[in-house]
Length: 274
Image: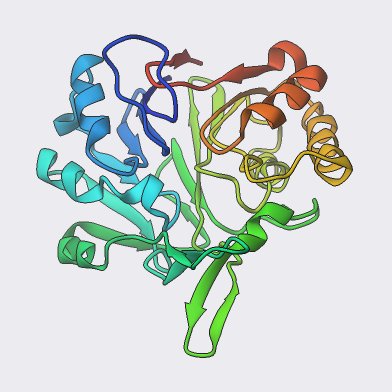
């Protein structure tokens, strides 16, 4: 398997654009996959610079209903006329960031994206696409949820309520005797998601790739405890973790102190082979 980071908050080489968001291109023996599309069409520019032909993608996956992962969806559908787009049935919710002291800010998808409805395959829960690809959104919650996610809300007729991230899905890929777990932001906890993947596999995945959503945590005893507990939980098995986007530099440094070489940075232009 080959995974190319098309777009991320940073870029690891000149000539690539960076933006708060994530987009990954994945090649397996049977598939060419786009996982998330970043906040705009920057991933298309980077794909061209990296020699990735997005017109050849046969499967596109949107991890959840936030703009920094799905803002480029319409641009992808213009560049690619063949891929099914797998989107959780709850991903078009009314999602907001409600940070204290600020006006609520809409962070959901453009409602007009429903115009591509004919291209969309609604998903939910567990979906085995074939022998290589499995989508799941039914991870448990044994490991503590992230306090930072409390600022992420859904607007309803009764007002705002905390987002439970039921609209978030993860991609498990099995090929050539290897297993890779791809997650967007892991809002429901990377340990919970990793453990659900291990349950489906009957073993730990060989690699986990995606954001871990620690960047909004305020450094201090509570944040340190949560990050360190996460790092110790991730020590189980021999999984290698590639992370960036919403993980944050502070959390990355603390996780690195625990995981060592099993934690590796994710940046625009990064190429991972498993």
